[in-house]
Image (cartoon, rainbow, N blue to C red):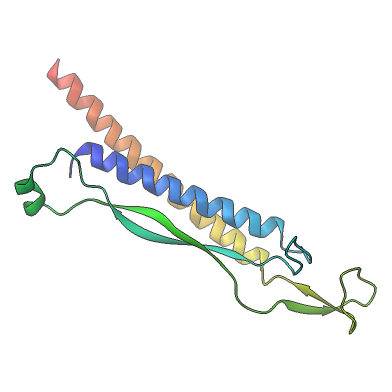
Length: 145
């Protein structure tokens, strides 16, 4: 794997973890949202990742056969929670049904904060990897001078 592929893999990881963190913060912001433009309560969203090939366009066929491609990560999809809403009895609430129950999303702020910390740590790890590869490229350039 070349240093430039390493940079590309790290950048894809940073992008994916950034999307994950953004989705988690949207979940936290909408934890008590009982009505969306679609009419129901907000539905928790979760990011699904997939691997992606980071092969260099200038690699020879022979080199591609000898060494496997570097694998980066990409966001495959953002899934919505399919569970029915949590029902709370609040007859005075403006969004209460005829039976007095209000639908709330299945969002646990504690779980979301733990997930956000994981996304932050994942992002930081990719930044460290990116910076290490960048330093190696810089030292290689310095050696050629």
